[in-house]
Amino acid sequence: MDVFEKCRSFASDPAIAESMGYPANPQKAKELGLYPFFIPMDQAEGTEVVIDGRRLIMLGSNNYLGLTMHPDVREAAHAALREFGTSCTGSRFLNGTLALHHELEARLAAFLGKEDAIVFSTGYQTNLGVFSALIGRNDIVVCDKENHASIVDGCRLSLGRMKRYRHNDMEDLERVLASCDESAGTLVATDGVFSMSGELAPLPEITEICASQGARLLVDDAHGIGVVGEGRGTAHLQGVAERADLLLGTFSKSLASIGGYVAGDRDTISWIRHLARSLIFSASLPAPNVAAALAALDIIEQEPDRVDCVNAIADRMRTGLRDMGFNTGSSVTPIIPVFIGDSLKALQVWRYLYDHGLYTNVAIPPAVPVGQSLLRTSVMATHTDEHLDLALRTFAEMGRAFDLIP
Ligand SMILES: Cc1ncc(COP(=O)(O)O)c(C=O)c1O
Image (cartoon, rainbow, N blue to C red; front, side, top):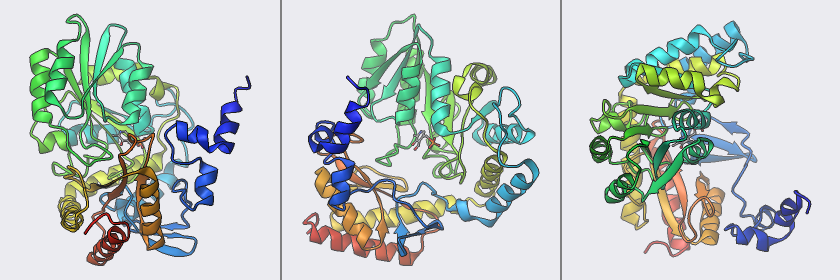
């Protein structure tokens, strides 16, 4: 059998795509005008984007604080580009560490109240490296079922075992931990802010359970940093930053760059620094990206109003959608899902909004379970009242056109 045979079937036979959970294969979806992925933008200025000459309101970005176009962030990246060029051309381990990387690590550790931190080239690589380095043959990692894919992939790369508990279900977490071999080292891993639903993990309960069962805790706060807890994230918001052993996150959202970090005690970070293969065998974060993240961190510390602002805008958007009758789940953050259910309907709804000037993200199987398709919307601190008015008006029209709201 040709190893590429499945690729040809996926491209030509819609039934194959359906059997994988997709409502249609990419070719068919394009013919129907219902292909929402890889859309090239001609301009992307933060709250607005231009596609095919049309201006749309961006309601699908992780640029929560709107810092990617901030003059200080751009100037810091420019200055680093002039000084260090476009690439470090090597791994952090060898020729790819700049004093700037160390500065960012020290700043992050201080910001998060941890002894030390290490910076990776992406958030995804951070999870690959951290879990594969920490979870040895006799260890177990216990994951929330809705954790980000990069945590799952990191666990799969490790030599240990992964167990999962029902999403945010503390009884189930206790049950799973109780089923772990007492001689095994155990790490519980959860998103701080869940990336699709915008829900928070109940970290005070999780830290209690971890303490009572002798487990360590890692919080992936990719969507929490810059957004909650005065920008310090979910563990700070919930008053358990000291009890959460490892705080992990990314620069690709509020911090207006790319890259990832993990912060914790000195010995554990040193272990990760020397054993994480995604750090050691991959080139380091380029200087302009390090400088952009540092500048974004400065702004978060100096302008706490930005954090309040994105949450106020999220409240307005969420309340508006809920009052109309949309189901936005348990979101309490700038990530606001709009549950649609059927995947074809979700694509049609996405297309309607797209045609009427709103850029949203759609999540269909296999990214979400069958029958639970949704639009993932997210707001930024830089969205204006006019953006929100127009967005809410368009959602109302869409909801009535598709019989989703009264
Ligand atoms: C919870 C979580 N962790 C890790 C990542 C990976 O981060 P990056 O996109 O910076 O590689 C993401 C990305 O969306 C995420 O949502």
